[in-house]
Image (cartoon, rainbow, N blue to C red; front, top):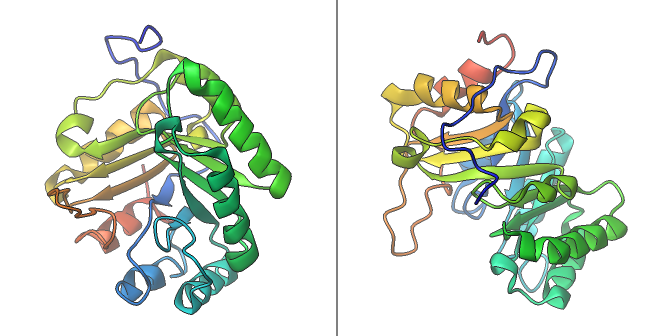
Amino acid sequence: MSYLISAGRRRAPTAGARGLGFGVPGYAHPLVAPAEWAELTRPGTPVHWAVLNVARGPGIRPDPHCLEAVGRLANAGVRVLGHLDMRQGTRPFAELVGDAHHFLDWYKVDGFYLDRCPSEHSELQNTRRTTTTLRALLGEAYIVLGHGVHPYPGYAEWGDQLVTFSGPWAEYRWSQVAEWTAEHAPQRFCHLVHGVPRTHLDEAMRIARWQGAGTIYFTDRTDRGGGTDPWEALPGYWDEIVSRIGPGATE
């Protein structure tokens, strides 16, 4: 990919940019993880957005427990995004739009998280079609493109925020940043990192700030395979990381 540089160009945080905050890629069902959902509404917790994934999408009917959780988030001013799996561009367009309608009709979401969003130039037009349609359904839709890697630069035009890293700490600590991201403000980018030890939190946060990410989610939980999801529960150091990036925290 010629648009990635080999040396890992870094940059300092942009003055006046919105402070570092959380992008929550999706906790387990509210019945299974009530504490996790409740923590997102705690005053002073800087949550930029949280993903609602009922059952690999919106499910087949409105879920009363999810409705209740979304209502609490809305009352707390937290942006809720419906989970749409693009399957690297292989998901039928009609299915994506159908799921988006359900999220809007049942849960009144504020936008969408396009998981497994393709990153190559060849899929840019298909992604543009999807995001344009989603904005037509909800004019103020907030759209996060969940690439998990640095995509072709043109994708920045079609998402409010791009997830340019999603993966383990062992890869993140040696990650490099794409040169073209320096043209955009930090609030355009998100990093999701699992397996971050408590002793390396400071280092992880320095990497995020230096690479120009305004939204993060770090957890000490790991992906052990077999269907385990490191994002489904709170990290063991949740209170500590909230205190580091919440109101009154210092750089």
